[in-house]
Image 1 (cartoon, rainbow, N blue to C red):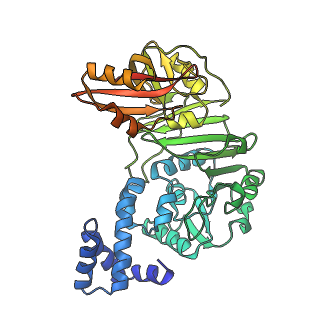
Image 2: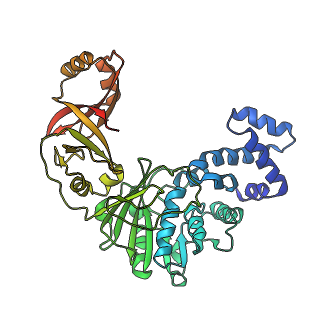
Image 3: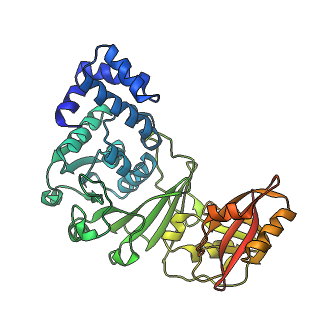
Length: 416
């Protein structure tokens, strides 16, 4: 996609091409392209329209129905914040009193559009000319152009004195190759600039990779990890007056496909639902250690947001649970307690790992289908599945882990 192609798609002829592409997208791409060309569309316009139609189909899971009106690129879509996460962040900013926001590195505008829907005036800055033009087009397409404007330029040159708050999502992929950047100093904008924003603007939020090293979290900032339907999707640093707790795990359930303008959640709680829309939050210091003991009847597999936020000990306290190994994030308790922060399994057998013994036990139980979970084990699940040579019609869950440092397998069944 280049600026000329984008301009062509925004003409009446381009709009007709997009409508035609939406009707044939989703099947064989060659057949779809042939159908558009047979309808008299120029090859270049047909190709650009089909690309947008396919990207819009993929984007529904992130943006809901709004995806049908947006202009997208593949890298931009991959890196864009999910609508439910962006909406919740916008609600929190609005509740904190932010009325004007700079989105530095706004990309296609996912976060900026959510903030604009919440009534915040957003000034987007994007270095890539095509992406900046697409973000502006998305603001118009969603009826938010009065609240979200975009300039193409260097994020480090923006006058942050013009706004109450700043949101920054530094680029973590190399332009042209799409390869991930693991050195924060190679981000764009660079890490020193990003963390320095908190000293200049009282309401600063930085989106970071979920795998960020806790040592990189600035002193006094709140680090939050967010999962959607069990998938860890991002982390964010809430700085200045936005920081409320050292660590937060936010678990969103059942809203991944809702539109980006669906209402978010502003209330907070520790380990309790915050509203009917499936948002749950667990908070703590991130440095507390859970008690260690032997495996018990019920095993909890914590949500990845809880694990990455280092809040396993806080969850253990809620559940009355313990670890069986201080370095493995499986929790064990004597009774099942409903929680949005972990999946619960009932443990039927605890065995020192032995392929021969495990195979014999599963044959006795006529187990023919297994799911395999693992933490702290070097075993490859698919190889183990083949080696077990299962035969039968009963299901089971196998947990490969360590107990007091020793390789162990737990045979389990799910708890409703």
